[in-house]
Length: 54
Image 1 (cartoon, helix red, strand yellow):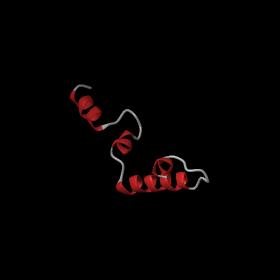
Image 2 (spheres, one colour):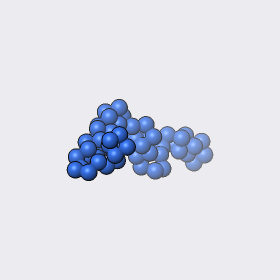
Image 3 (cartoon, one colour):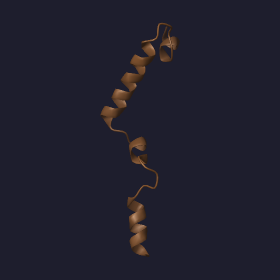
Image 4 (cartoon, helix red, strand yellow):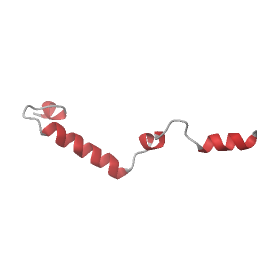
C-alpha cells in the first residue's frame, strides 16, 4: 500500500486506549485520585497514603 499505509499507521494506535492512558482527561484524573483517597481513608485501619500521614 506504500505511502497510504505509512500515513494510516501514523494516525492509528495498535494498542487500544493507549492515548487515554498517556493523556488522561482532567476530570478522569481528579475523579480517580479522589476515589483512591476516599477508598483508602474508608478503612478502619489507616491504609495507603493515610498510613504515612497519620
